[in-house]
Amino acid sequence: MALKSFVEVEPESHFPLENLPYGVFKPEPGSLPRPGVAIGEYVLDLSEIAFAGLFDGPLLSNSDCFNQPNLNKFVGLGRPAWKEARVTLQKLLSATEPTLRDNADLRLIALLPMEKVQMLLPVAIGDYTDFFASMHHAKNCGTLFRGPENPINLNWFHLPIAYHGRASSIVVSGTDIIRPRGQGHPTGNSAPYFGPSRKLDFELEMAAIVGPGNELGTTIDINDAANHIFGLVLMNDWSARDIQAWEYVPLGPFLGKSFGTTISPWIVTLDALEPFACEVPKQNPSPLTYLVEKTSRNYDISLEVLIKPSGQADSCVVTRSNFNHLYWTITQQLAHHTINGCNLRPGDMFGTGTISGPEPESYGCLLELTWNGQKPLSLGGTTRTFLEDGDEVTFFGYCQGNGYKVGFGRCSGKIVPSPQ
Image 1 (cartoon, rainbow, N blue to C red):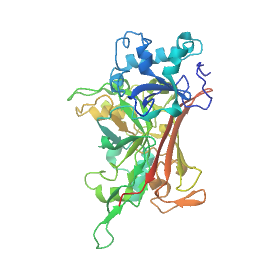
Image 2: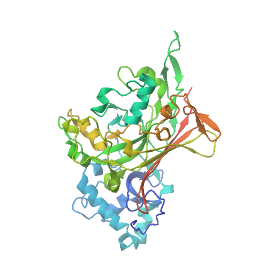
Image 3: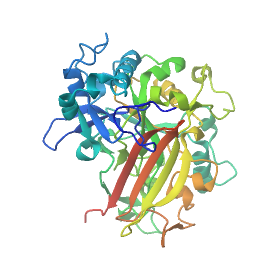
Image 4: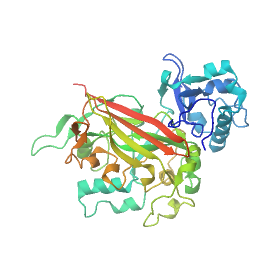
């Protein structure tokens, strides 16, 4: 049964007492950013809770981690501190605990309506890596561009493939995305096309936020990797397919990706996701020893993508997928990332790659859903092959518990025209 908070939480809310995701917000436009947790339709200001001395455990009582403009210091403290904070906050917000419930003055300054605050990026993201961890997505892309005979390269089954992305263009949900300009494949003997992308796409992904890192030249053991992952966010890795197709040989994605990546503002911790852990797909062949886990797990996170076409009032669901379709786990991704001695730092982020399922209705991008524009998608009286200016794309994700949901809120962005 669901836990009970003195803060009203609707059954369909993404933010019950079982969740308590972390974010960073401004109470008013001119105020300083500060950390908070979501509970129902409210944000709990952790800087006020810390000032009131309510983080009284051994690891947090003398810490200024909640008096920071981002969550980097807190996520860098590691799992014991995360667990201490979670226990404290679940008790503080419970229906039977009077400390905050009966303190009207503290509630007034610490519990703020979510609709009135401005959400920001939750961490300062120093580095961003994007993986390619869904076998269904890899197979579909390979079939489109290389043919069905050998759609997935041999190396894909031996290691989590990734590339290094651009951290500076990661934005929080609700930020407009400007249609990128760039080069595309030439037609015949003409010069390459140059101008606004004509094949703009979304990519349904999730991303892990790194907690404690590792020193340069050292590695993180696969069976300790979960202790270095603070939690997950929804992620839309917007993609200009025409720009990407022309530029990606031989070095991979560049301008087709780096113009914008949107993440949801709330980080759902692995502790909150633990009740929804599930088995991973069978990995064949068995990975090399450094990627073999004693306990290998995915999470049962339902994912949904909606598009609201430009000029229309209603959104249309275009895909439903699940995090559990990933072939490579997030812990394998992190362990592989460090196997060469690469140092990760608190607040770094790595994306899963597009999360596609086995059925067409679970494909995680328009490239797959429209089979590279060959099968237009019906959207409530209009059609799309790729995104048009004014289109708004929204992701939702949640885990279904017994009488409650552990969710991620929304991850949305609207396409605006390329500047002339």
